[in-house]
Structures are given as C-alpha cells and as structure tokens.
Image (cartoon, rainbow, N blue to C red; front, side, top):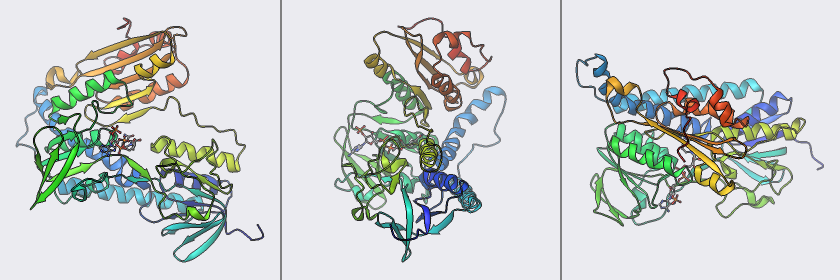
Amino acid sequence: MGFEFDYDLFVIGAGSGGVRAARMAASKGKKVAIAEERYLGGTCVNVGCVPKKLFVYASQFPELFQASSGFGWSLAQQPTLDWATLRDNKTAEIERLNGIYNSLIDNSGAHLIDGRATIAGPHLVSVNGETYKARTILIATGGWPYIPDFPGSEHVLSSNEMFFLDKLPEKAVVVGGGYIAVEFAGILNGLGVETHLVYRGPKLLKSFDGEMVDKIIHGMVAKGVNVHLNTDINQITKAAETLSVAMSNGPDIEAELVLCATGRQANTANLGLETTNVLMADNGSIQVDRNFATAEPSIYAIGDVIDRVQLTPVAIQEAMVLVDHLYGDGRAVIDYRDIPTAVFCQPEFDTVGLSEEQAREEYEDISIYLSDFKPMLQTLGGGTDRISMKLVVDNESDIVLGCHMVGEHAAEIIQGMGIAIKAGATKAHFDATVGIHPSAAEEFVTMREKTR
Ligand code: NDP
C-alpha cells in the first residue's frame, strides 16, 4: 500500500458483533479501533433484546398477582403500575450495561472512538474530522427500523421510541406480524393497554411452524390482545392527542399510540461505501461471502448489516468466526442451520430446527409428536395459559428435525433442546432420557404416541 497503518482492524459500530470482534482481535495482539456514534452495545442492549425482556417481565406481573390468590395470598390493595418507575429503572440498568461495555472495550486494549465513522476508501475511515488508515475495516453498523410510507405515517413510533415513552397510552395499535410486533403487543396488553395488533397477512410469524403459530394467536387473544389479520393500515389522522387509524378491514380505531414494527433495514446509508467496491443488495444490506468478506478485499461485514439472521448471538458468533479467519487458524465456521430462537410474545414461543412445513418439503416421511396441556401453576392459580410442545422426526433416520414450544419458560427449555438437535439426537435418545419431575420440560422426553 505504501503507507503505514494506524490500525490492523477498524470496527465501525459497537453493537454485539462489533464489540466482540474488536475484543477478540485485540486479545490476539492486533491494534484495534472501534467507533460508535450512538450507544455502546447496539440495538440489543439499548433498544432491543435487553430492555424488551425487562418490559416482558413487567407485563407478566398482573397474571401472577391474579394467580397468587389460589395459593393463599391476598394483596392488601389492587396493584398499580407506575410506568415512569419501570421506564427509568430500565434505563438505569441499560446505562449500567453501557458502562460494562465501555470497560470491556477498554480492558481489551481496543481504542474506542466516540463519533460517526465513514469510509473514505478501501483502507480509510474518517471520524470526527480525523482520517485513520486501517489494514482491515469491519462494518458492524447493524440495522434500523423501517417504517412504510402511507398517509399519516409521520405519526407512528418505531420500537426505538417505545422504550422511552413519557406515558403509557390507554389504547395502542401495533402494526406488523413479526418478532417485534407480537412481542410489543404482549407487553402493552400485559401492562394494561388496550392493544390492537394489525397484520396484513393471514397468519402472524409466517416463517414459523404454522400449527404452533395458531396456538400463539389463540393464547394472545385469550390474554386480551385484539388481533386483526388480513388488514392494512390505510391512513392515520391526528386530532389533539388521538390518532385515528383507518384500516382496510373494519371500523377505524382511535388510539394514542401506533407502533410500526414492520421490519428493519441495514444501516448502510451515508457510510461512504461509494468510495469502495463493496456491493449491497437491493434492500441496502452488504453482500459478503462465507468469510464475511465484501467485494472490497480489505473490508468485511457482520451482523444485522449483512441481513442473514438478525439475532444477537448470531452476530457474536459471526464475529468470532471472522476473527479466527483473519487472525487465527481459520477453522471456525458458522452453521446457520438449527439456530434456536425465542419470540418473547405472550404466550412465549421458542423453536429450534425445522418447522413441520419445512420438514415436509425436505424429507419424504416424517412423524409429528404433539402435546398440549395446562401449566401446573394453573391448578391452583387459574388462568387461560396452555403449554404446547411439538417434535418433528425423520422416520428414516429417527433424527429429531425440529423442536417447538409455546408456553412459560420456553426459552430456558429450548436452549437445551438446541444442543440435542445440534448433536443429531434421535427420537430414541429423547425417549431414553429420564424426565425431570414435575416440570413442563419432561414432556419432551415422554411423548410416546405419534400424533400423525
Ligand atoms: P420482521 O421481519 O420479523 O417482521 C416484519 C413484519 O412487518 C412482517 O410481519 C411484515 O409482513 C411486516 N411488514 C413489512 N413491511 C410492511 C408494510 N409495508 N406494511 C405492513 N406490514 C409490513 O421484523 P421485526 O421488525 O419484527 O424484527 C426485525 C428482526 O429483529 C427480526 O426478524 C428478528 O430477526 C430480530 N428480532 C429478534 C428478536 C428475538 O430474538 N426475540 C426480537 C425482536 C427482533 P410480511 O410478513 O407480510 O412481509
């Protein structure tokens, strides 16, 4: 190149993937910079997984208060929610995590630069008026909520703002049928907001096992969410504090808040990519090969910005595989099959492996084992919740291809099932495993009768 590099690796974006890559590269003795314009920890820590899960916990208390009476408890007074306390305690916890990220970066030896970085050439990154020379540049800028354009769309919120509301609305409309829409519908409903979930398609969570999604919809409706399927938002008009939402189907809804959870787009705008050969897909995400290399040999990209699987643990694993490729023995690989995932809707849904629909496409002969029962808490506590579990098995090899669960603690259970599926466990392995009694999880190892 004819010039000395300031850094071996310059990471743009201090989210889950960027921070992991910076720390791992620094631990291998590389000179690393990481630039961040907004908040440390990215979407997951600040306006995603972490505050969302805190809100999910908050929204589950009313059902627990209700259930407690069957166990002999009486509450001295009707519990009430102070939204400001929840929001501010959440923010304090996120700030604590921001501090931890700061120390992790500092302790790794990577150099944190506070500012918006742009690429000025295949080896050049500019931040705060300084231009740095980097042997390798890593783009880990993540994604940003996408809001469709329609009359009145300027009145809607994205998930980003939901974490900082001044006050909780009495009535809200949530638009979309993916992870974020169903999760926020459950949160708002649990916190006592009259919630309308509006989705344009016939079924929520369309890429997941259809039978399990039916159970989720049934559970959400039983908890009080108003689900409007096959419905588009035509227009929103604002009068004083109220938004009037005109829908393609049914009467208008008057609400104080409309959340559009209509997908996320890669953060690649104004990044300076035109100074390089980096190629983008039509949706703005960066195209990379199996080693996360872009079409520009010195530039790599990982995480939501490459739009493969938008999940934090995937971005972290991509970071580790990339650092191994760049500075290790290059043997680490990422396998995008059998990634366990949780949708923290209510009832919760967790899954690993193939849905029944996918398995029927890929395999000739499969069996389905299905179990549906009341959680034990309900025996004394009452309530409408069910737990549903499903195994999808290849009859030829007896391998369990997919494992799905709707119900309480599903994420805690499916994480372990993920190991079994990854290890290629057969139905015979499941059957030979002793259950933990009494638990919901034991049902996964006691499903003897084929459902079909
Ligand atoms: P998703 O891609 O999951 O869902 C987007 C939804 O918006 C779909 O139902 C889509 O409908 C709908 N939509 C898109 N465009 C329009 C439009 N113009 N008008 C009406 N509806 C529209 O995106 P999310 O925003 O929910 O989440 C983004 C990603 O973040 C997820 O895919 C997931 O990878 C990740 N995530 C993970 C979580 C977890 O692990 N628990 C939690 C939250 C997010 P259609 O299906 O018809 O296209």
